[in-house]
Image 1 (cartoon, rainbow, N blue to C red):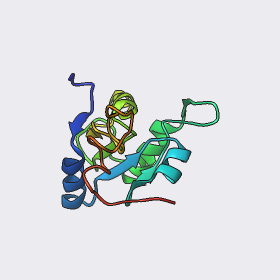
Image 2: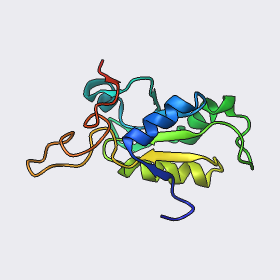
Image 3: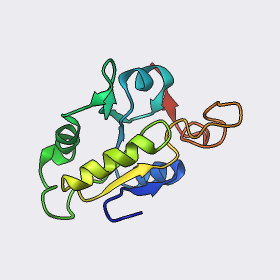
Length: 142
């Protein structure tokens, strides 16, 4: 892990951080379809990193996250303001998205390394080895 990587959290660590600091934001960066139909952590904000139908990177991702963090203020050049925790399916997209936020000058960026659904098991199923849902943390489905 380099200083340009978001800090890796387990799902339980992320949940505890959210409970202990009400300013911390949980941002689900999965596609709209994943967020709505697979489910998402209760209280998560949704800003896709990439979305259907084209699966291109969201050019508004960094500005939208910045807007959530204290209305876009307090994040320039200093360790002030709220922390942001990113979550995707298995922790890969959130790592890339976190690097982008750090490069944009957002100081306290974390990501759920196991993601929402976790890694594939031997039968190619998710949510059976690790991930937010596997650990029984609060989530909902639309």
